[in-house]
Image 1: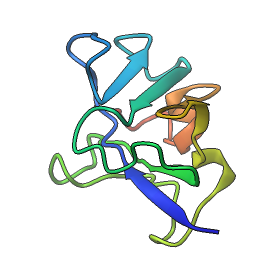
Image 2: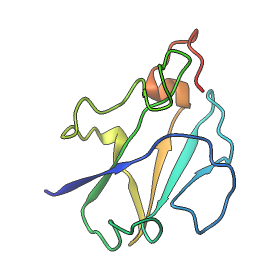
Image 3: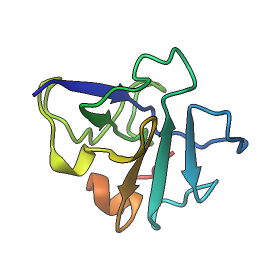
Image 4: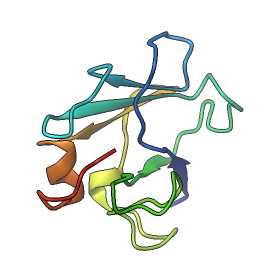
Amino acid sequence: MTRIFLFIIFSFITGFSSAQLITTTPLLPAQDQPVTVFFDATQGNQGLINYTGDVYAYTGVITDKSSSNSDWKYVKEKSWTDNPASCKMTRIDANHYSLAITPSIRAFYGVPAGEKIL
């Protein structure tokens, strides 16, 4: 089965518009609450437009222990070929997907209580 990884840098979205590649609900997620991430394949470079295979989000968090804004911590995937079920996006329609991060961002990624999620 062909699998394509969708790269998502989990960050706060500064504004909501249906014309954005990635949006969240709630708009400004809190680390101790659930969040749903939405991906619109009709935006961006449209590399997954009308794609019919499974789509996985490659995700992690930036914390106060990160050395830079690209030093992801608690990445769910162990390698580029690892596709955990918790990272499989739900197809909403032909070009829209969602990923529920539950029960909270902190719990989903297993971030210890003393570490600050940025």
